[in-house]
Length: 213
Image 1 (spheres, one colour):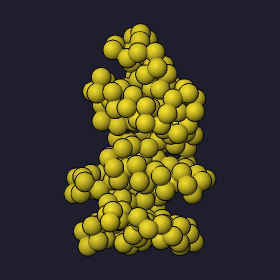
Image 2 (cartoon, helix red, strand yellow):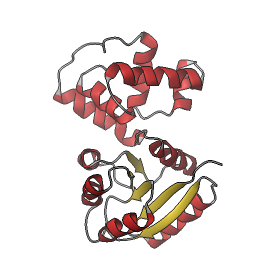
Image 3 (cartoon, helix red, strand yellow):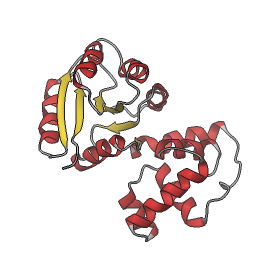
Image 4 (cartoon, one colour):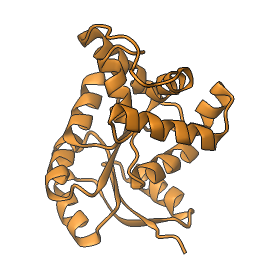
């Protein structure tokens, strides 16, 4: 039997919390272990309930989601934080990633995509909403001059890296490059190894920073 993914929900709107709880409880691999509308309550809830993933709104009535994220990075670095928000402001995205968030998802995301995002971060992967991925890459590219093609990547891997940077899932990448999902997964692991990164967000940021895309 597979281990359940323990999720803590942090959002200041009760209806949003109830909707998220109902959605996640319908899946056998999720367990909602707590919920709150206040950032200051998160530390005690994490300590008491030991979630694997915290779904965290960026805007809370007491302290910001960014500050909650920073604190969790120090006190519970093993907990994966997914920012779930309506905001696509690029400065906020960068703040959240720098604070230690492993995912940034916009609230209009389809339920299937949100569930897959939670599963992905629980496996140690990173998730960046397509609505903000392009902006992150553009900003990184503007800050750094073009340094040419990434060394060691073949043409297929460069194409896959571009799609990763745009926030595409493995399934979407496979359809675009006409390869199986397993082959795409193998390519992505090789891309991470060659670039010396651990996840999709790091790969996308490095690619943008280096002017490869």
